[in-house]
Length: 531
Image (cartoon, rainbow, N blue to C red):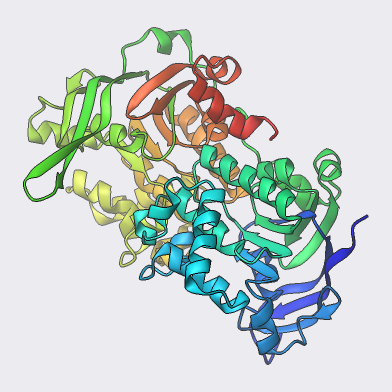
């Protein structure tokens, strides 16, 4: 067995120096061997990130216990000593590179700064090393990208730049805190394959912080499971997935989406289409220089059909045109060409009054409920807003009754109506967003990445809620996601989008089990197959 590189003994972290009332980490112990890939998993708030950041005393909190790095206790080390270790012997990759990178400094200069500080390199030599690192992490035109600012890079490129910065001094331990959460599934696989390749090349250990169990199963040698600040289970990866011991671990493993939709009846299949998009095209233009414009085609001649009570899953990477297509189908994209026909009525030809009435029967649940719910309105005002708009003659007692009924439908108590969105968890806010859509009794609900920001167990709860509501009310769903696992669990049919076009569509089981296109196979491989 390799020598122990890091040993954590009874680490506790409290954010209240006088009492221990807010204890984020409670008596956590684990070790990481040199060259090992170790994962800490758990839901948001379980203490994973606080544990990782506390190893280098990067949180303003009271810590106790021992963090032995090559035998040296970092808890007792001076700040000067820690500055010498941070970025050199132990490096970090953060979840969101756009907030971790300095927006005012070029990417290359942020990497050279690490080399100048820790290795005393001159700028010219550091520049050569930085360009080589950018190229090594898969960034094309590395010399040109050296001079780019963070906002000029894509999400995947920014994460690669973060990795290049973290590896600049060839650290012995790399802490990767949710390094792929904000990325598409195919980019996610590329980043993890890159980390695995670099880990073997440099011989470094990796501490992976994540709530993505599928990622852990593919990547880690050993796993520690955290719940409420405590390490509740520690095991080899294969053993943990085959025979989880702790009830919390069992619940996490059971949270992966399973098939939830009911088969459509023969009557529904033979019935009239609820929604039909015909040759939908959306083009955006943007200036190039002073007088020229360039046209970007976001949706390129797409035709789709949605039956009553059916879920059509639209899957693809960011920028593939999924959300733009959905907005065009709802008649909310002014630049759309082609036509969208809802319940036999063309949205392009419908008079304004008729279009407003139709939109009461078409609702949207967005990806981020915190951004889509007004922070200034109470839950009662948010949920009842659509009803007050479309049925202005309804009296206040009846409006309140309908609001309470909608909240009850999504599993929320009536006493939440006077509270505000910031007082709720992500899962609860998404339930509120669903209640807001449900209260009008829609026939069509567009679900735009409704669970991508949620933990696995909360995600499963929301998906089960949506599946149950569909059966109860016969609603049709247009489900948009880049997560094929969610799409496969919730959809009757799947349409795969790439570059603004649908490259494959068919029954969910057929698309998942027998994909015809290489792009679909690539998406499936990123989820269902081992690296």
